[in-house]
Amino acid sequence: MLDRLATSLHISYEISIVKDNKYGEPVLNNGTEWDGMIGEILRGEADMAVGPITVTAKRLEVIDFTDPFLQLGISMLMRQPSQKASSSLTSFLWPLTASVWTFSATATLATSMLLTVIAVLSPRESPAEFSLLNSIWYLVCILLRAGSGYNCQSAAARFISTVWWMFTLVLFAQYTANFAAVLTVDRRNMPFNSFEELGNQTEYKYGAILGGSTMQFFKYSRIETFRRLWESMQSQTPTAFVEKIEDGVQRVLQEKYVFLMESATLDYQVTQNCNLTRVGNVVLGSNGYSIALPKGSKWREKLTRQILDLNEKGIIMMLKDTWWKRTHQ
Image 1: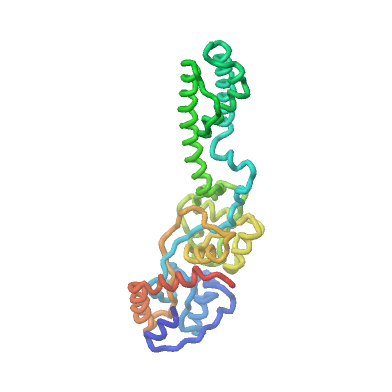
Image 2: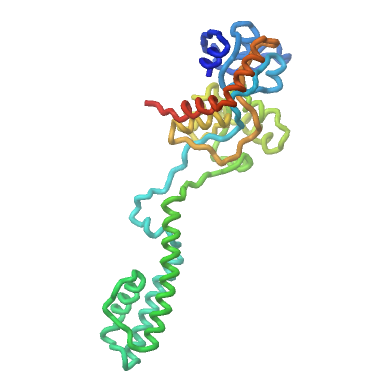
């Protein structure tokens, strides 16, 4: 994106990494001194700050921002929960519950005994042909839509066979439908799916980047759920906060830890590591990544105009798809 902006505005740039690896928050209570990228802009050490920097009220008091080049919100990143092995020898039993299988086995045995009794009592049936084992085989063949070699002669046996055929028709249809669902539905069980559920559990710890906009969101929120999350993060030992995104991702992979972060950066991390996942579809707030500039900078309007042009042409989205879906070799 910087290359395209530089080409459009006929400027050159030099990239330097911020020395303390922070985005920027006030060092003193009066807000005159800042660390991170914001501090370097205020001290004149950098002409602009480009990165996953979001606009906050405190930051806007000391510096200017362009319009956002990428929209985002706050989401939860966690490690993929373990999945049920699909290669189990009993996987063919998953489509129906244990009670259904038990009822079906009982119905098969009871119907087989009924056919045997009918064969003994009816002069038109052969008791040898419809013994208990042969009756079970006869009913299983009806279930599997296969020929058994046995034919009922009495009206009672034919009636029982018709009822059994209708029963197996419903059972087979239910099994087929559920089996297709078993093969396609994700069988993972997420321990929680919302921020409220996250705050109500104690198994997973959670945190954010120290001094980042996500931390500021929870710190100053007046909503009860988010205030409880903030109080919990403050009381955690070891600390719930991390210095860098990479540190947060490592904690997610190595511990029972949920990383609260911007959705755009979260989506990138998920595409780079198949062991990571987003929790639910809840996205808090509506913000964006912007370019930070000194107060009154003449480049603010020019950069904003070019960013809007890149967004309207779909170039920003194209660049995001290119880099977000790019995997490490």
